[in-house]
Image (cartoon, rainbow, N blue to C red; front, side):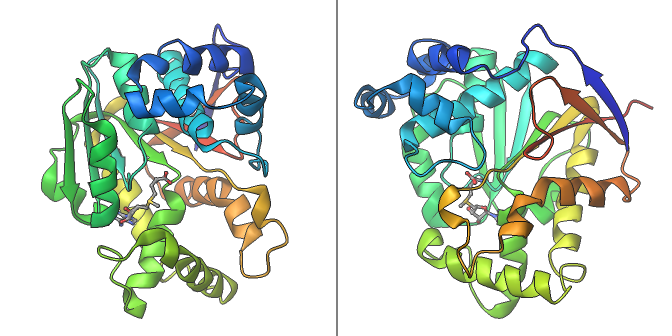
Length: 293
Ligand SMILES: C[S@@+](CC[C@H](N)C(=O)[O-])C[C@H]1O[C@@H](n2cnc3c(N)ncnc32)[C@H](O)[C@@H]1O
């Protein structure tokens, strides 16, 4: 895979003071609903919590309302650096109940973008809907496996596909469904440890080649077909300090999810090149551009 480096006007891309301003009064704050604003108002020392939320792995005293807004600000800054059209069409597989990409799209586009997710778990979808009702942007949620994305969307119809902390979701689903877990219906978080243990077991046994890699690569390959030439695929992952040294947690696998995905893409023949942005650590974030012609 080819790699290009872009010097943006922001070095690094996510300076803590800038991110603090964006979530406290700026572009991201303006897209938060009343409940999220109220939660932020209750946080003591937001600048310190932003600095923590920007660290990898995430510290023990993380503030969840701040982390959520910081993730939105990070995607917002990546959009500003890449400059897709303001009225961009965005696809996010595996959104669950998480709204940072949605907030970033609303903030970047002033509500002109359109957003679509393909997501399996129904309880998380219900939670998400309560967090996005206030936004202007049209939002479509398709309940299906993202492996069937091409049945729902025309090729070349998207500007950006965002895999926001989604590589693990796809791998976990791929190893759990064949073992009999109905991931469309389960209460996700109480069941997530079991999914991760199965994933660890398959990774240790060298079985991701048969289960995990094919599903992930199909979803990525379909996203490449759905994004127009010159458009982008964005990937991020993060980890929690609280899992360091935890026996059942496959730390090395989770630490290397983005590099592993990069390596799989590099040998896939997909027409992608990597864009390196100043201040964006390639261990945790990956920007890929669909090659033209
Ligand atoms: C915990 S949520 C994660 C949300 C978000 N990616 C994040 O980390 O903030 C995981 C979601 O990914 C969805 N998911 C996993 N594999 C999927 C697939 N192959 N197709 C569609 N949705 C999938 C699950 O159904 C669930 O709703």
